[in-house]
Amino acid sequence: MKKQISDRSFKIIRKMQQNELTESVIYEEIAAFAKGEQNKQTLLRLSKEEKAHYEIWKSYTQTELKPESWKILKFKLLARILGFTFAVKLMENGEDAAQDEYALLASEIEESIQIRKQEEEHEKALLEMLDEERLQYVGSMVLGLNDALVELTGSLAGFTFAMQNTRLIALSGLIIGISATFSMASSEFLAARSEGRSDALKSCTYTGVAYLITVVLLVLPYLLLGNESYLLALGCMLMVVILIIAGFTYYTSVAMDQPFKSRFMEMATISVSVAVISFVVGILAKMFLGVDL
Image (tube, rainbow, N blue to C red):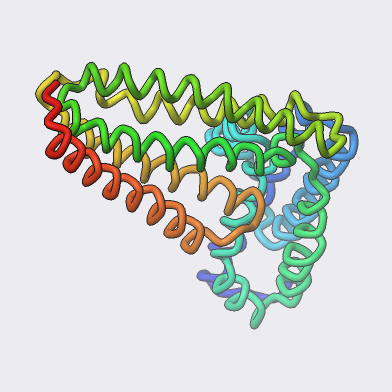
């Protein structure tokens, strides 16, 4: 017979019971479309362990619960769009916030200590076994992203004052960006081939796609705003730069367990600094060359 527990602990147990059941279903659902037999089996093992934890908590609440359909849908969509590694690690990171709750339960329920230990050690070890293709090419994506951010941010900032016309700036940016996309992709292809890699085409594709998407997003403010709103377009472009850096850094920090703040600050500082320098160069070029577009 289970010993009497406090109302506060009972609420925590019920919450954890709900989470374990929902996460068990999420792992099982994602396993159904995850590529690679090892990945499928790893996800199914995680699902099984979460279900076992659910049964433990159920023995205290004596209540049968249903999984949260909205949460299942949310993480299935994330897994489809951003990859199953990102989705499941993001879900598990949410459990790290439950440290205080486990500490409270430990004084009343000894089993909570064992469950926490298993989640910290065994489940995280299983998560490290996941091998998703797109994460193998993060280096290629970073190459395309970083180069596009630095090169095009600088070019657009320089063009902004030199041309003072959003359409001309957008046209110049697109020409440079698309040309640089093919240049960067072909360079990555040749570099991979010279290293004897069999995935040279796939590697250069990831680099080129990351570069091209960045080009489109950075040029977009100049296409959407009026011809005289070039300074506003510049400000919007810099905001897009920060959002791209923040988004991609957050993705890699979750999926690959990398630090967020230091990497974000590094990339943002470089890109914004290049933009400021290029803007000054555009002012000086217009002043000394006497070109009036």
